[in-house]
Length: 353
Image (cartoon, rainbow, N blue to C red):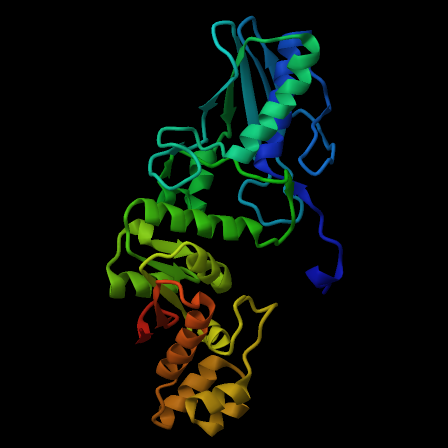
């Protein structure tokens, strides 16, 4: 079977790029009477992609255009979603007024790059939308204000699969994207979400956050730490991203919660815990734990069983070594680190602090 790394992965377009193109098409219809189809925009890197319209509508009060998002080969929850922009002219205003339509969230907690009460259309997409609109309004000499509403039908349902509820973004998705381009399997979006989670926790005055690799590690952390909802950050495999951000933006206490295999990688110095980018060295694990028979094991799960038969607490040894790695990354930042090793059924195997 073809491995995904053996072929060129197809890039896609961010939600922000789709929203900008839809807004430009709607604005052009208001100013010139016709919808450009396809409609092109200029991205920050100079690229000029074109987008086909999936729908368009014009009345005496507004124009509306929709574009189906193509995220390329990236496993984006919004791939295939319809991104709609509704534009109205406002003769009594200047600039752009952004609104959250159906399926676009509203910010309810501090710490994000948007004020509480604002539609969850991030600053970079706002700039991209504004630039796309200027390409229409400046040549036409239009100086009045514009009311721009972004909608994503079904976005409230899709948002449940994102970090938005935990970040205090209610009612739907965020309109995201910095470059306008989705790079397949890029860590950029995940790292951005980690940083937003840390910023929200800090703005809420929380002094302890827990970075978790997945549902089971989060379950163990919840039971052990009893922290507020916003204290739990889905860091995925990016322990290094969380630790480096905590070093630059310290929070008093930071716990890394992960399964034993991923923690073993951290204990051995890996900061990206994905199976494609780091491996467990069984010989090193045997030396670390003081249990030579582990060297011949095929998996960490098997090693745990072997160590247990020999009276060795493998999770405790791994947690202590992982804590050393975490402290090395944090350097002299005023952050008290801890490690929590979780079982596959969400129970605590070890806790080092």
